[in-house]
Image (spheres, helix red, strand yellow):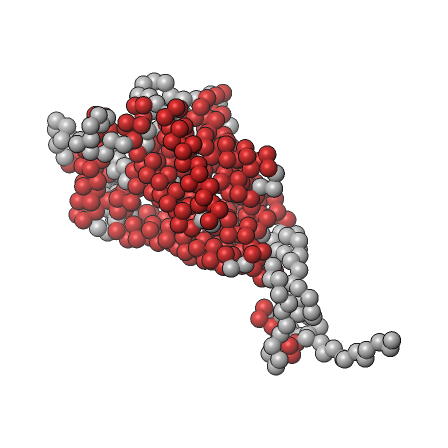
Length: 478
């Protein structure tokens, strides 16, 4: 029953705002500012989720398997309890309140619906099983269990910390087989390819930048910027032209959305970056990075051949998209379909994947899948842009502005880099959307609790009618 004596039972619009009796609104501690569904289960599951996020972004589970030759099944050890916590704490419903999550969920449903129409149902079913079991659940892990701004910061720190592991792996476990020439690659895991490793780096680097911009410790800020420089160096040593373009896109985004101080800092760092390129990046890698046309003098022959092959694969993926616009040729079946239906290498095709995430989706799963894929990305940008614009108008919310700024930078670099790799069915983009949903939700709560101006209900409003009437107090006698 609704009654003034039981304010918790009143609808939210009728509750008096904090500070309504005079004075500024005071934000309660995070432990008190809990949303519906918070519980001991959520408390424990969130901590499991932090470990799971660190494992996924650092690929430490693959690193340990490579080192000790024993699979510790860390994803199952932390993933199963985390997902159980998501379900028990209402995380599924909480996540689906965000529009990006709806798009990614319908995208997964479309992948399932397309299995009967695949050119090889067994192969598509296997790929779908891997995606649903290990990658798609990350959509619900972050948004479903991260309820407060402090917890959002913990999630971002986990991603930033994972960067140290993945960078160290690039130095300690560099591939020396000669398969990639002098290009940097690692010996193990799902991102052992130079281009994949570089794409991973440009996604996680903005989270280290976030540490550099927000850490209270000067030593931590200095160390963070050192890791950023090292990460850029590693990305360039992969000789990935996609990563190079992604870094340019990130720099342009920084100049466009950053503060004047940040812009000056980036421009001042330019000569240092050029010097580091000349000194530390192999000449062969630099030549490959800038080899885009056969008319370029001294262009890398291997890079030019790669460009020709990529152009062919892009054209074929567009052809297959137009020929199979609804469900495509089948989930993860572009390489096999192209190899069987073309004759560019003797009696068969190249048997390569598309090397373009967007046409990978459209050619393998159809135009509706591509529309959902782009909608998931676009709605994530819109959520973070909304937080950025709101926080920019509030001096007391600078930390929220910087977080939104860095998340959008990560999305910018990632969405540029995946134009040159096959990342359609990896966890990266659903996880980024999940983080954006959590940050947006927490930001709205922070905006409501950080206002520096006193808030008084309007005369005659519903809020004022619920407030107890205060009798005027006579001035004290002097």
